[in-house]
Image (cartoon, rainbow, N blue to C red; front, top):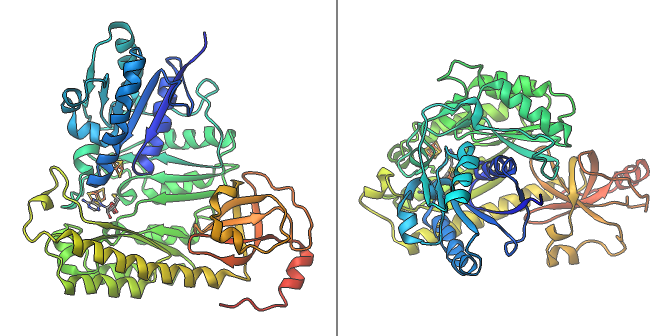
Length: 478
Ligand code: SAH
Ligand code: SF4
Ligand code: F3S
């Protein structure tokens, strides 16, 4: 029998990307094959995010477009999953009569049974049940039957939920209690991925530092050591590390675990101790700066990125100045900045002293403007250096028109893309500066001589001995 078509639309964080791959694998077992053609879909899954109001709106506006599709094709199954589904539950059924299934963040492994019920009885179902602990059946790894397109890099969720209750955040409510997967299943899943061509894994958790603590499993650093022994795997990344729990053991891991990339995402949220307190982050500005200093002391070339929330309730000009001065001091390699957004259940929604949208927007622009300069300065420093890049594929689409215009004429080679260990995007030619052609392929580590710096990426040539020698004689210092 031909397989039925499954279309998945994913909004949100890396965990949702991972969940979508799990959704595809679980539904693969009931005869659904994922493809990216909305019109031919027999089932559409919208995997939603609730972190800010905008993300939630994005889900509802996409869902709105599906009502016409469903009218033309009544047997189509429309399912909504993820964090908005968990939060809104059966309210979605009454609001959107064309939705057949609302499934929460702990219901993914139950999808095959749920979908079979819908196919048989055409009933509408809501399953937002949550479990305290992860069980082995909650995740599946790649098999021949559910094979997906082999990429070079993949995410693997190592724990779900969060117990930190930062006052602005919806995650503890929509993802449930913190619970860790056992290390064996994580290692097995990565090994299965490596067999299919995966060379880089990003281990995911809301607070990886507390991995395994509740269940008495190994520590996060010990998990990293185990993953490090997987033959064929070249790089390990992880996210997110909560600053309050960043341990010396984990800082040492950057020195001792050879496949661990020298990049840490260490979200600060605010540079003001007073605001951090109201956010329930459990560290002060000084604690944070100390952690950064400790990391740079042990691992001087580590790249540090962060998240910032501007306009948290009660954020004064002086508090915002503290954030600005912290950003100036740390000089992040990259920054995600957001305007504070009220979320259902999150205590900050009930706080006084809300900041006007116009002020939030102004503060956001200041932060983004500052970061743009720092990123460019850091990128320019790379020009003239040779970087090791994990080749991820062909790149044309990653280069925008402005960037393409400034790439030297005469480079007729195919453009490739990849990232450095410290997570900088590098686009590159398949010929060296001398016209020597390279046999590039996905998953190899290539040495690239950086020739151009852009706001979001670097550009260069693969290095031949000849090029290195000649280019090395020139100075590219920023
Ligand atoms: N567990 C991670 C964060 C996951 S959410 C951590 O603790 O760092 C990703 C980011 O979204 C957060 O770091 C925060 O900067 C932002 N965010 C979360 N809730 C938000 C809200 N209500 N308004 C604006 N930004 C928010
Ligand atoms: Fe949200 Fe805080 Fe948990 Fe991160 S640590 S997911 S910001 S509650
Ligand atoms: Fe969004 Fe849920 Fe992730 S709220 S950021 S998809 S955990």
